[in-house]
Image (spheres, helix red, strand yellow):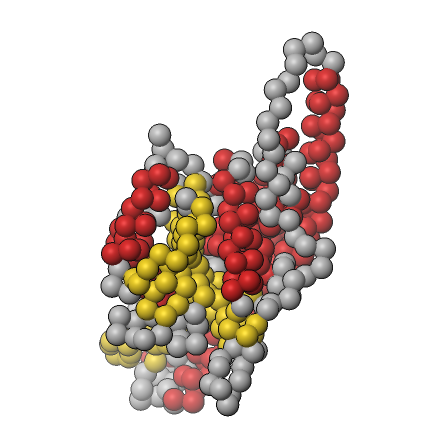
Length: 408
């Protein structure tokens, strides 16, 4: 097993992350900087936010019998005879593997936090689990002692994860300040370039600049059809607010389409977080991500009290099968009171016109499809679906398709 939280100096790690953020700002063009500051900040923040270490519930797997060296174990006579018979002495015992699921970048278990103790935890690190082993001999080990040692090791891992999470939180809180400072410096550099360009005799051709997502000065209130128990009316979003959300998602998606190549190459999760933070910046912090909802985790959810008002799934286009899995996931998240949803599809390195055509075909061939409600734009279409194939309860599914780099 390897030592955790020891291989890389934390200060250097976070300094590297700051430099990556600075480098991303330096890729922004003059045209991008003339778009909404809010959209730029959201995209950069989503790209450079470090996810905290989240540890799941541990579980054990019986690894079977193993030989255990008892040469230095004072509970056995071999310890008294080790000077006379120096060769190792073994007895049969049992090994269990303790698995701790985690949700974060596995590289974080290499980072040394600024707060620490002299005792490092040890475990093997896979893509989504920590695993450490414990050997016991049932003839001499008591269950309460085994439990305590396992709990102590789990507690040590949790404590070190907490130390590093404190450093991550501090870095994440600094991101917006870094972005503001670097955007200001970037604009000043480009302004100096512009001053020189104005003195050139060849005229510049002007192009239209799209403003896109703009964070409102005052946060918007959700317009809700309120609950009426006597009339059996559940709370739900007004269509006006649903349309407003669709427009916000579309505006931010267009900003993503116009962003620099590096920003367009974000993975699915930070791209999802960009939409999540955009909605959260508008709707009073009611938007959450990766929330458990009926049959799994949904990407984006807007809640009112304990009721879900809007659910969205975000996928990078891959093929028919994965696209339809996303549709089924979205419908699977719905309870009978959820009725307004979005399916955000991000097209990369393929023909976006082909993606638009194929996604429309697939949605209209789905068993739950009822009808197309409105074609808002060529790449944004609202459908009416049955929540389940045998259900009388309907829902809205709005398809959003954004081109993050077409292959021609």
